[in-house]
Every structure is written in structure tokens, then in C-alpha cells.
Image 1 (cartoon, rainbow, N blue to C red):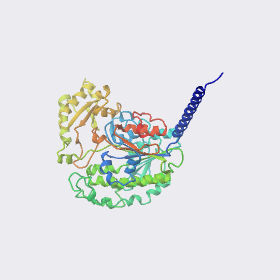
Image 2: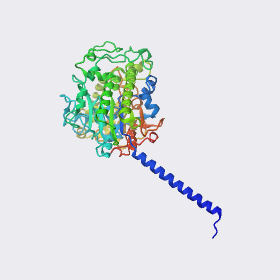
Image 3: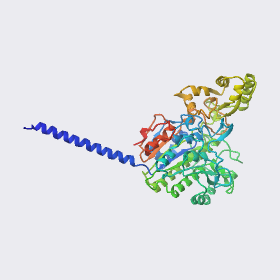
Image 4: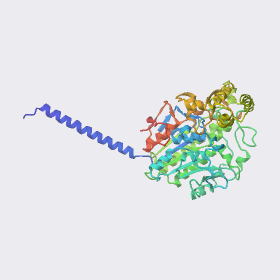
Length: 556
């Protein structure tokens, strides 16, 4: 049979197309396989305690090229990143970053809270079944046992059959214990007092490694007991308010909050080491120790991914003392930028540029000092706790004949005594509502929700959504108070946090390094999205309580 030329051409063309398609598919499969197997040698999680998002933009021109700017220019910037729960504080913040979920699931509902099952106050990381390592004090009696779910660090350890290392470091115990998860090789935190040492718990080890003992005896800690002046000419610090004002706290023995700060306990090299935390030197000390851990623990030296969790805590101490708009906060972030640059250079040298992945975020934001806001005619205020206590006491006695109906108040939540309510033949939900209505009549209250509402409704937006994500049915209270924006229960100096208001929820989120795109987004992202994003990058299981989702724009 004679075959026409057009038929031959068509057959040949189809063959070529088929070959090209198969080759393309095979090439894509090889590339996908290579990407799947090409993981960073080290993940570094950085949490900056009390860092508002706008610190990144306010102080940007003060930063050098190798710290924050490097992350922004080479990495991915999530500009609309928020905590989606309250209370916004250190313990819940670190836990939510690393578990990919909120207090409603992971159970860390505050730094401290009232344990209604055992009728005691508890601390998020305390555990007296373990002993201190590196100190004779009880400061090492810590573990993550109150955290109900796994962390991304746990899942990495499980995925690598415990061959990948996890080391967690922070000045604050909770800033190390909670990110390290249940399976960390080590978590280290700083004990000040009259010792000035990095310590840990028998939960992790029975004795400090040789390199930690050597660091503790090296004199590095003592070198940071020195006067604090601005790193640069204070006249160039135009991104903050006047140095001399009435909105800032004082170091011991100081009569003015102005630079330089040289109180006696900061100068004494033999005792009172906690004061280092109140200066940017605490962050420098943390960077020193983290870099030493990177080297001595040989993190990122093989193809099994390790994890280094670092929390910079001095930013929180400085913010609490001096406030969001202070020269002290500006100087602290200028110095932190240089510490980040040192960390990144150490990673480049010891792990290899392009071989590690970093994310940076915060554990909460902070409010401008209300007394400062009032001076600018912005609505703000303070809770009069004595007047509130007296007024509420009179209400309870008039309504129920007793004040014993209240068992505890913590994290802006009332815990009721359900047994007494039952003995009075009252309905718990009705008592919750009565107390909620009472507090709605107080000037400083913005809104109130009841535990019954948290149980019965499914909120998806706004303040109630944030409260519900922070509401743990087994641990949270019966009545939840929300203060008016700009209002706090705190001293008249310094900033604080903890509310569901946007100044406490808006926090930075930066990614850079291996597997990360360069770019930014103004689409909303939430703190629980961080852990599943890193999990997706690593190809590991998501933490067991994950409610966040991977941020697809971040990943290559």
C-alpha cells in the first residue's frame, strides 16, 4: 500500500511531540524529585520578643545591609501578618509559632494562668518533677509538659529518626522550652541573679556540655555589665520621641530615663546579672551563645536537617520599661540588626550560604504608652483596679450575697466557682451573662464575652474570632473582658501587650534562604501558618494540632 507524504509527516510529527512530552515529563519528575530531596541543612527560627511590624519599617533606614535588610531584600516579607488569638503574650506566642495552632488547641493560654482543675496558679513551662542543671537555684525546673501537641521541631526530629538536632536558646526559659518542643536535644536559658549563667533542666540532660561550661566561665557575660549609651549620635535617632519625657521607667538608682544609663547594678560585674536583660546587651549575649552552639553542636554539617531556635528577649524587657516610642527601643533594634548580621555571617561560614533557611517573627506586638497617647489627644487610658474591685465586690454581694462565686481572675478572664453556683440553684450561663452585663457598664470596657458564647458559636472574624482561638475549653475562664483600644491595666510608664487589639497582633514575618522566594505580600497571614510552611518546605508531617496553612507564595 502506498503511504502519502502528508501521512508520514503527521506520524513523524506525532512521534516528535510524544517524545518531547515524555522527555519534558521525565525532566519535570527529575526536577521535582531533586527539589523534594534538597532540603536545607539547617532551619533557624528567630522570634523577637515584643516586635511590632512597624519597627521593621520605622527603623529601616537605620539598619545595615546584613541583618533585617538582607532578609527583606533576599527573602519574603509577609506585611500583613497577625496573631489570630489572644492573650498575646510570650508563652502562647512562642508555642503558636512552633505548633502551627492557637491556645484553643495547644493549651498554653498565657504565661501564667489559673488551673481550674487543680485550683492552683501555674506557669507555662514550670515542672518541679525535674531539677536545675547549671545552677543551684530552682530556675531550671522546667519542661514543655503543659503543651498538648507537637511542634515543627518535634516533627523534624521524628522525621529524621531523631538524627536531626534541635537546639533552642533564649534569655527567657519559656522562649527556649516551648520552641524546642518535647524532643529537643537541648534548651538553654539565662539565669541572672548573682550567677549569670546559661542553664537547662534535667528534662534535657544531667550535666551541661563542656562548651556551655566554658562559655559560662569565659567572662563574656561579665563583659556586658557596662554603661548603656546610644550606639550612634542620639541626634540621628529621629524615628523615636524625645529622650527626656515622663513616659519611661527608670533603672534602679536613676533619677532620669535619659541616656546614658549607668546604674550601679549595671556596672557591677559580680552580681545582679538580671539587669543585662533590660539592655540590648542581652540580645548580644544571646547571639554570642547561639553562634557558639552553632559551632560546637556542628549544626547543619550534614544532609540531615537540624533546627536552631533563637529568641531575642531583651526587646521585650526594654519595651516594657521604656515604651514603644523611646530612644531606648530604637537603639535596641539598631543593635539587634547588627547581632542578626553576626548570626547570618556565622551561618554563611559554618553551614554555607544558600544551605540554610531562616524565618523571623515575634511573639506579640505592643501598645504605645497610653500616657503618651493621651498627651497627643489620642483616646487612651488606664484601668483603676482599686475602684473596679470595690465596685464589682458590691455587685456580687448585692446580686448573689457572696463574693465567693469568683474563684480567680487572670489574663482578663473570670473563673467562677461552679459548685457554689450550683448550691445557690443558679445557672452558670446566666451568671456568666449577668457578670458580662455588669462589666459592659464600666467605662474602660469595650466588650465582654462569656464562656457559653465561646462554646456555642463559631466566630470567623473580628475580636470574637481572636478570643475564641485563644479559648481552651479545659483551661480558660467563664467571662472574657476586652478593654477599649488604647487602654491597659499597667503602670503609667512603659508599654505592655496581651490584648486582641491590632497593635498587639500585627507582627513581622520574614523568610529567607534555601527554598524561599524573593518577594512580599499584603495578603493576610497568621502566626499558625509558619509551622506548616516550614513543614511543607522540609517535606515533613505538620505538627499534630496544626490549624494554620502553608503560605504558598513564600516557597519556590
